[in-house]
Image 1 (tube, one colour):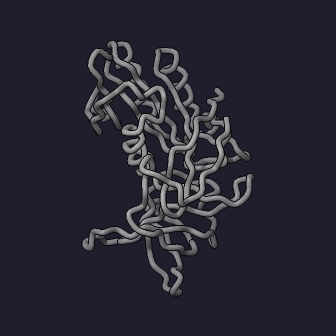
Image 2 (cartoon, one colour):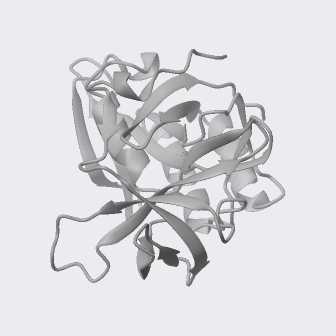
Length: 252
């Protein structure tokens, strides 16, 4: 399924807008998972925060053009955070979102706009609600006369083949446990949805990276067999905002 690309100026209230203009920079290296050295336009070298615990395959090549946000918190040790990278993953150069926290902020906006059909009937959304055995769900959706819906959001930024997004990009034992907990909620009479938010505008289809984490793939298949629903939506990205753009098919 495809959709026309919107110009950056048309990103509306259904998007996650960056609070201030992003700062371009050049990547020197990423290290210790959450740190990267970059060169700013002034020529200054500095350390920035990397909000991504994964492998970031194909997204962290030295010399890449990256875009940074600046925190309004003056007390933060690292005021700059890496948000986007410009890369060619097989469909031409494009912006890819690497901050794994942004999909949750984006979904919070989307839930107010009734964009995703499967989520339109819910009128209340609570974040980070405890459930199961010491787990937290990203969103608990509720509406009068409907079973509660446990919505888990997953960030997707892996593309090893052109237009084909995958998850995960590293082993995630915690993610597998959450799948079993979601299945337990379905067994108890609730609804559970796993929403893959793909921060790659060229994505046309989605699948699990079964070779990277076979255990997660087994847990995913088990959860779906027990009634957990799965959705995948790609994003449109600019230096100003990120928007949920269109659903993509899940292939296995």
